[in-house]
Image (cartoon, rainbow, N blue to C red):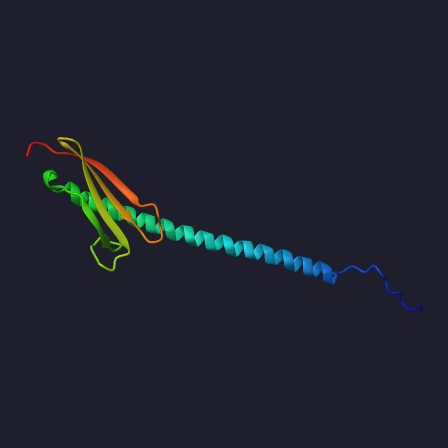
Length: 131
């Protein structure tokens, strides 16, 4: 029986190839984590925008039920997620009334929400008939 010879080119992984694989895996995982973080931020911003739009639409419906001759611009007021006036509310609601004609009022309800520069606006025209 002859002793078996050890082959110099045996198949297997070298330390360098393992390190390269670990680095590539790490880069992929970091990219995935960053993508997930950006997705969560975007989802939170869209949820806030949706809530602000709901507040603006609800308040606009209340305004439409008022006497058109008594409509006036309102200063910003803090409201909660349901649109109820609350000093600790995270949303700011305001209303601008401008006259486009003697019998036509343009009403803009504006709602701003946390950490967002662009407010949500709902605009309508209200006909003001004879007083």
